[in-house]
Length: 258
Image 1 (cartoon, rainbow, N blue to C red):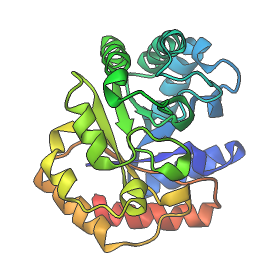
Image 2 (cartoon, rainbow, N blue to C red; image 1 turned 135 degrees about the vertical axis):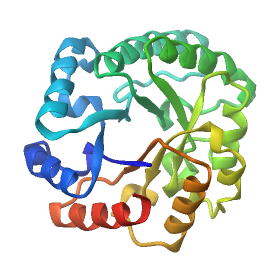
Image 3 (cartoon, one colour; image 1 turned 180 degrees about the vertical axis):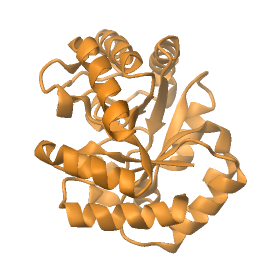
């Protein structure tokens, strides 16, 4: 396994300090919210992303391995056909942006864009995710669907079990295994053990993205992933916090997962 951290956990003016901290604690990957680097129309900045990615590798030994908040600012719903087309066009640009970064995982959380209207079922989302996963693959990227609990305002794929069940029916689609969801939904790791082939990326997080706390289940998850020969990234995901908290969490996660 390899370790990364999401850049939503600190302020932009702390980048250099945190990058140093990340390398000290064994991180080789960086997860980004694209608007953290390019606040306006981020996917128009593919060439700038290519340069930024090269600088991160050269200066800090960090590779951009995942992107989250990928539909930030978009209000369209994937269950509305016309709006789904707009989202798919936007994701095509996103994956080209990811290709410029070297190819990476894309976390499909996006709770506001996946609220399922009355009368719709999961099957109504098949075509959208089939096309999105195919588009990601053409650009050397992977799309990973994340289960979002109801606390985040969506009614589509609320549990880890539902995420695995859905992804297994969509060629090329993976699951972003979110530990905060497992905690919030009182899930066990049995579902994870039954679906190791579908894990595209892992978030070590807490409900509400508060700072990660020590849990015995983290060790159990790490052992399970090792048994299944998972060689992807385990990424710390927290909302903005201070550098000492980051240091403590990264040191702890490194001890457990590396």
